[in-house]
Structure formats: C-alpha cells, structure tokens
Length: 88
Image (cartoon, rainbow, N blue to C red):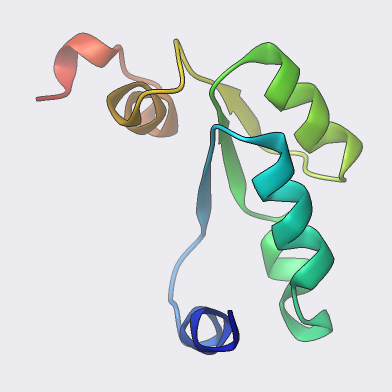
C-alpha cells in the first residue's frame, strides 16, 4: 500500500471512491497516512448499496452517492448522477 499512497499524494482533483465492500473502506481508512486523511474524507463515495452508504457515513464521509448496484458501470453512473443506461 505505500506505493499507492505515494501515488495519491500526487493525484490532482477530487477523489472518488467506488465502494462495493464496507471492509475495504474500513481497511483504507485504518491504513491511510495522517497526511492523506483530510483529502480521503473529502472524497465522493459511490456506494453500491444503501447499507454501504451508511457505513461510509459512519466512517465520517459526507459526499455519498448511492448507485443502482455494485457493478462498475453503476458506480461510474452514480459519480456523475447519470443513469447506467448512458454508460457503455
């Protein structure tokens, strides 16, 4: 994970986290370096279900969108507020 966090330090723009596993989000939060915590919590979470959205909220995330499902196309559509039909 250290290389991934190093890459995130240089990432521009706002982050989006595609969430299909509450355990994965908890692991990310637990292992994130302190210098990335603020930017991590400001990321838009694209939750694959209402339950996952609740987990993200409980972990301190505020910008959460619930996708129609946990498939990649559903999560991408939720990022931009589009229906999945527009994703090919």
